[in-house]
Length: 88
Image 1 (cartoon, rainbow, N blue to C red):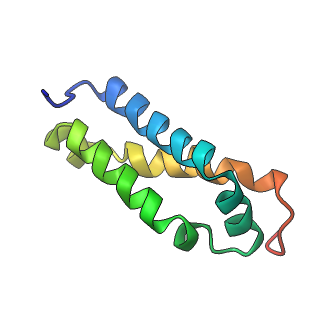
Image 2: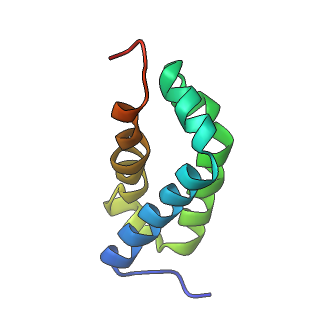
């Protein structure tokens, strides 16, 4: 499969991957936000998603943009305000 070279397509892939992580791990997301260890709890899922993303996207796009990390913040952390947590 040819790697994606269009930045907009790469951005959408990153957002879709992170959305899937959230969708399939809702309880872990809630637990991680509540206990302030979200990235530790989802470490394996995030790394699996990152690998998938990196395998789909051209190296130049990976060097130039941080779409996957932005998607983590935009989508994964966006769940935070809805979950009671001691960090709020």
